[in-house]
Image (cartoon, rainbow, N blue to C red; front, side, top):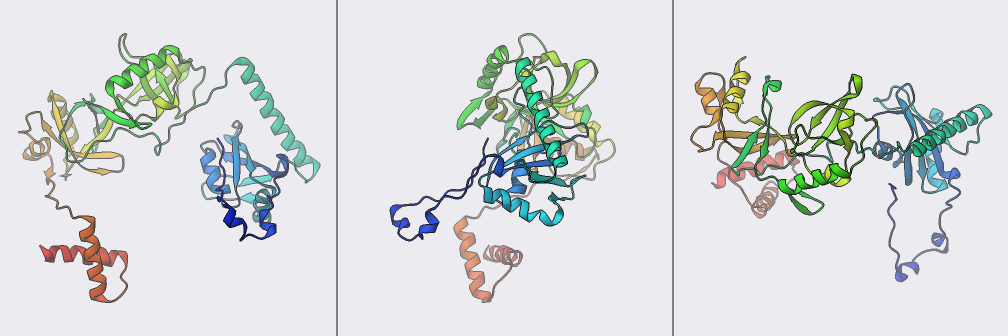
Length: 399
C-alpha cells in the first residue's frame, strides 16, 4: 500500500503562467537517500499511525513496519517521496537528536537515514537490523508461513446498521448472563439481515454461502495475531463457519475468539481457524449490541430480571430510538406489540422508565431561514451555541 501526495493537474494554459524553474521535477534521489529508519514504535501501531505523524513533515511514498522486537517495540522504514521530503523530517527533529516524543510513547521515536552519514557504530546497528529482517522474511517465504493479517479496526469493521424508528423482528443472542451489570448489554440479530458491502446488497443467504465456499478453500493458520480477523470452523456439522476476531492465545494452541455474527466469546483450537478474505472482513457483523432506552434508577436485581424476561419471550420486536456510540438504544416489545419490556420492569419497581417524547422534524430550508432571521434581528455575530439556542427559541415561538 502506498501513500502518495496530491498532484495538481496542469493544463497547457497553466504552463504559460509558470516560471521556468517551476517546471523542473523535484530531486527524487535513490531509494536510500529518501528512506528513513524509525525505531521504538509500539507494537500496537500500524502504518496509518505513522502516516499521520510523518505527513506533517513531507510527502510519503510508502511505509514498511518490521517484526516486533523482544521488548514489544518495533521499527519501520518510512519511504519519503523526495530527498527534500526526507531532509525536512531530519531537519525538524534535529534539535531533539532525531527523536519525536509523544505522551503515549514509553520511548521516543528515533529517526535516521537508512543511508546513514553518522558514525560506524550506528551504521552497524542499522545494517544488523536490516539483515535480520531480510533473513526472517527469507525463512518465512521458504517455509510458506508468511501471510497478510487483517487487523480489526473499529473505524473500518462495524456491525450491521439498524434503521431508526422502524419495528424489527429480531433473534436474541442467548444467554445474556455475561452482561448482568448496568447498563445491561444484549446482542440481537435481524431475521432479514441486509447490508451494503462494496456497493452490493448482501443478505443472510449470500453471506452464508460465501462463508461456506471460502472456508473450503482457505488456508489454515499456523499462528495468530491479537485482534486479527479470521474464519473459524462451525460449532456443529452443517452449520455456517464463523467470522471471528482473535482475543487471546491460550495454552495448548487454544484461541479465545469473539464470533462477529453470534455476539459470543468462544474458545477454539488453532487448527479450526483459517484466513479471511478482504471481502468477508468488510461485511458488517450480524450481531448488534443493544441496551434498553429510557431506563433510570435500576435496582441491583434489574439486569437479572430484565435478562430473564427478554430470554423468556420467543419473538421480540425492537424499535431503535437513538445510538450511544456503537450501541443501539432500543425499545423492546413482544411480537404482538402489546407489552413493552421496559414498562413491565418499571411496573415491578425494578427501575424508572421514561418513553421517548414525540419529535418534530424541520427541513434544512426552515432552519437556514430562521438562522438568517436571527442574525438580521440581532445585528451581531453569534457563536454557534448562541445561534442554536436562538433558532430553537424561534421554532418554539413559531409554534
